Length: 55
Image 1 (spheres, rainbow, N blue to C red):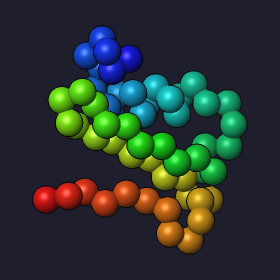
Image 2 (tube, rainbow, N blue to C red):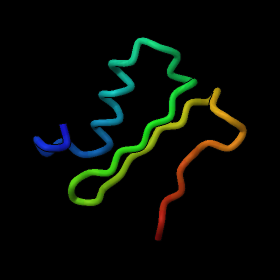
Image 3 (spheres, rainbow, N blue to C red):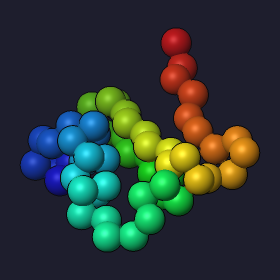
């Protein structure tokens, strides 16, 4: 998807939409070819599971 120009946010959304499992137990991060990024962390992940945006 990234190779066709789809932005990272849309890739994460598509991955989650296609996932038939428990979304609340998922964590995914994507970095696009132009440096844009997107993450998702489900509510049932470990106590600390997330992402941090750099300035």
